[in-house]
Image (cartoon, rainbow, N blue to C red):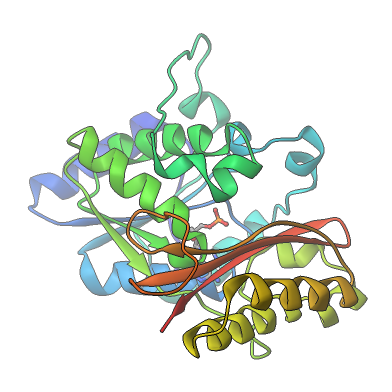
Length: 281
Ligand code: AMP
């Protein structure tokens, strides 16, 4: 069934009110569209956990650092609706811009601490944009649970903290990263890769897997990292924003995985910024 498309907040509120009155639980899957299996895995998790599922598609201008990046972001609304068909979601909320940022909108939600590193440092203002739109979507949908991908691990930390700090009664559910067969993490941005760049893109994940194995074997992170950076350069990556080992709980920088740890990487290939992260151990 094609999901009923909702563009106005008043219509969303009316729908949500009727579900709440019937005592039904609501799951929320926020996306920026150009849906792939990673997004659909969140939808499946939401369907399994909640009576009603709302998928949102909103390309949030406030979380982009450049107008060009925003303009190039893939938009595939019709195909997205088709991909959602088998899941029988209860609403596809594609808000008009003024339903999120009405004229005079002047509030920013800013989470401290975890935003100072990784993508927060590389993309100033990015997580303020994310936190602001996610807060709005949490409050607009009044969902009981919201599903986010660990592909954006730092984002999961940011939205978990904002829900806790602002007493928003919603459970943030992290879901595992879905990958292509060659290991490349699925991402809407993969659509922007040239055929040639697509061939080399999985090197990012392979480099991380090698570093994980190396540091688990007791080798020095700095050396493993240097080898990985050289490998990425050979594969055609032009810039690495970060390639770091960090604690899974608070993202503090580590030299060795002596607590639960993850490797985080962001790197540019043929003008496209790819990010990935994996658990170490
Ligand atoms: P986006 O449309 O890129 O903003 O992503 C929307 C949601 O899908 C976020 O919670 C992402 O973390 C999640 N997501 C994106 N790619 C993947 C993936 N490969 N596996 C699992 N979740 C993903």
